[in-house]
Length: 371
Image (cartoon, rainbow, N blue to C red; front, side, top):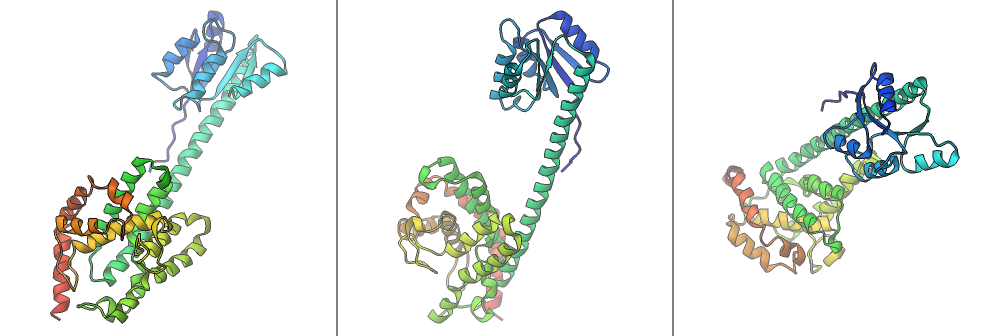
């Protein structure tokens, strides 16, 4: 991201006195681009077209007073951060306190002193530009951290894919399914299913790690080209706890920067839990299952159904959905199923998008069987 910041060195001067307007323009024009406005109404009209670096605002004006104008500014997110310096003939602590309570950064007494105006404007323009520059820098650093997190997650997810009888397509598809469910749920704004934007983003980001624990499962079980015995399936059922342990180690290292990994741990531990309590590893039920795990369960099972496995051929979208709907309220959260009923068709679009990878997955599995 480009972190270069171009300083805003323009000043909007608002005063109903023409002499004061000309005087302030004369004082400031050598250093700043000055825009005069003879009333509060004209000032607001100007702001609809341009955003200055600072506003010099007369308090006592006919029509809209300076207080009326700054109240409008603070109510509009486009303008609320523009520093405002009041121009006033009112002296005393009461006027000074009221100016700051209204949101002004400073105030200048009339009659106007050229030196005072220049120094105050210079100070607050520099402070504002410095703050904007810092915001850009923080944004760039934050994006860099997020990009690093995504890269690490991709690496870990690919390790899981290479160990299993799957290609990276399973991870990419389940991540997209998860995103579709999350965004639908986020748009519903159901208070019982409240999620912040940050939590929603962390679910989407962390979905790709749902099977990270499989890297700790022995090859003879994980890569077995036929149906597993009960004992072998018991080994597979350990992968949520194994994955959570791996993530715990990372959380201890990252500390406060690990909120996305805490969501990943939720998903890893709970995506095989069932709504009716018959899942694993803890037998959680209903809303006792973390929301992230309930979402991931739908995405993971759907992709398992439309993919080849050693013990079955892939199912078409319609049959996969029939099987999933049969388990609404037993395996899956019925509310999530209900809100997705008109959106599950988009899962099929994702399948077509990664169709070649599904075919490759089948070829890899067949090759392993024939070795």
